[in-house]
Image 1 (tube, helix red, strand yellow):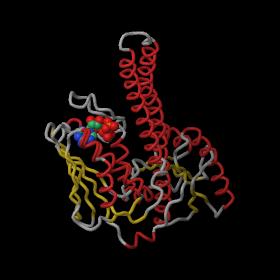
Image 2 (image 1 turned 30 degrees about the horizontal axis):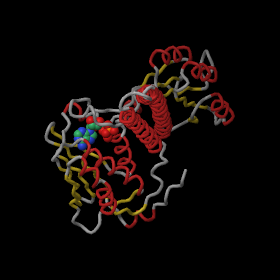
Image 3 (image 1 turned 60 degrees about the horizontal axis):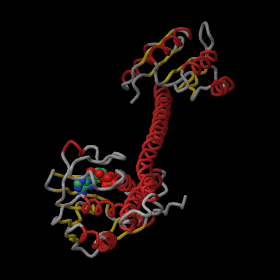
Length: 375
Ligand code: ADP
């Protein structure tokens, strides 16, 4: 709903039009001529201006071009008289969005106002998306260059140390230790770059390439198998509880794999020796619900609201030495949204966490949805 709708025209700007629009919930002002209208538009920044082309003083066409200079975003509709198509065309060329020929009915007035305000809403939304994209790009560049620089500086220093180790006592062991450090930092950089690229693909809509029938049971079971070694190294038990034959959803195999891979990886790495990770699946109210439950370090309530923000990481004693980019959950949330579902978290510090993914269950009519192109 628009916050304000501005109407400015001579004669027709009478109580009746105002009354019609007020009744529909719009805030309306009427002005008697172009000069007053322009002054009021500058002051009140309305969403929509209706201009009568035939006005005393400054002409309607002049008002349109001055309005455009004043506010490039305001939507302008013109009232044209005497079935003048030519003047309507001129007005549109000068920057008006729509026109309303005299005489008009209340419904015609409503239609033009509704169309104009819808256009304004879409413009604002796309402008907002553009601003957000731009801000995100800037944030990313600053943050990622910082994140990449930190391990790179460390690698540079370690390599310098390595260069000076020749001929020293125990050189071979020391070299191994320093090159291991280099490798660890290089792995962190690679992980960050991988996550960053995945996120930019998800955001660009290029990741979810096609919608096909996926069996989450097969995907989750495969991931659990692939994490057996890592779970053992971390002394964490890992099991799946997926009793049905299959858990069908509509989506892209690669996306679903990245999603559950991230959640299971987190459940293992933010766990404790002797802890457990369990993946439980069920069907509830037409949704496939997959919960990744761990008995790990948990997340305090004050951090839970930021978990899905890009680059967010909890900086506590229990997690400060665990490597990560802070992008995994952001990627998960975007993928789940693309698949038409949602992700929820329940967690208690020191007790453990449950990340629950709810996805719409596959229906045979989903088959008709044409696959997305490999853009
Ligand atoms: P990363 O693991 O790369 O840091 P994520 O976006 O996957 O990034 O997670 C963000 C943060 O949320 C992590 O740094 C961690 O502090 C917290 N977190 C995620 N999953 C869990 C979990 N299962 N248990 C405890 N903390 C978690």
